[in-house]
Length: 399
Ligand code: NAP
Ligand code: MG
Image (cartoon, rainbow, N blue to C red; front, side, top):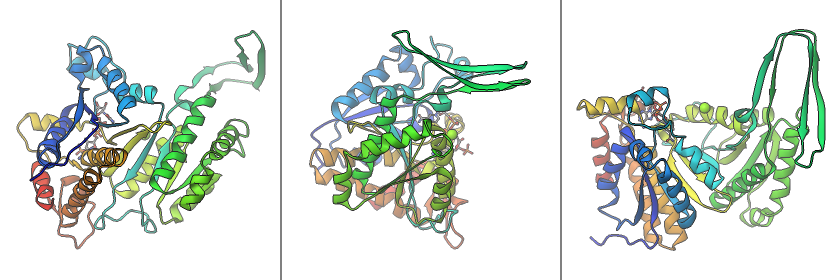
């Protein structure tokens, strides 16, 4: 059989633990036999990040800027416990996702992968809901403190040229707690542009919600920036027949629950954190969620939404064939291959990626699934738990 040719390499970022095992398996069984795969390989496994003093992560992000499309395996973000597990680590390296996001300056879009035999908890949902989460600032970059006496807190901004602006936060008559947060105009603008661009790319309506009735300047600024940036996309939206819709976060929640799905919901950082967990749980599981980082200048990094599935890896090291769900990692590959096909005008490559996705969904629909999904399957479906190797073989048989 003739393998499908590629013209531009994909930026391939390998990772850690169970997902690294699945990564190789997916490539060997589901991609390499069919595609003359061109990748520029970066090993983001923890050991190699340590060996290169994390330069490999920076190089991989820069390569994504050059080539435009990357696919990333889940990676360990070292914490205290990992420092003990890997005594050779010379530093507690930063989260690779944070480094890559910093360089590409993007927004993360997460979409559930839906199948007929696993129904969402919300019965009206017929199509996936995509959460677009702003990934900079607000409470994630806040300063906070406690005070124990009566007094007053004042918030002062000191401009580089020496000017000062100050506002009284509150006078209190006893102990109190305080927090100051910020966001940057440039970051809000790139968030808005990424959202509009993604809506155009995927031909879906865009919803955006904040609490600008209460936070008139802070959230009000987010709303204004979105309105300003929308001006650059209005024509494209009109041509595609899609809409941009702003509403208050509480109204958005009521509408989301009553909706049929099939749109993008842009959320501020904290709202996106909470709402993406709500949406993914209501649709089924994190292992059935795609995740893509889109930069404002149209660079794409595809990954799974879950982590390296450490507990499964420890069992794998003891010789067990675990039933780890590879769907999100397979869809990271198909997302990247499809995008490469689209950008390079290689319809065969895009078609192959679609075919692989369909093979996954058909396998699941036939009742062959990993253990995490069996308990979610509708009654009446003859669901059977298989290990990851059996699952991938079943997918291959559908290709
Ligand atoms: P996790 O790897 O997502 O796993 C949490 C639990 O969710 C697993 O123990 C498993 O539950 C279930 N699960 C997740 N993915 C699954 C899959 N594909 N198939 C079946 N079950 C799945 O999160 P974590 O344990 O909190 O983090 C582990 C490591 O991943 C950490 O070192 C963290 O830094 C890293 N991480 C990386 C990324 C990323 O690179 N994007 C994101 C998050 C976390 P059961 O054990 O009950 O089966
Ligand atoms: Mg969270």
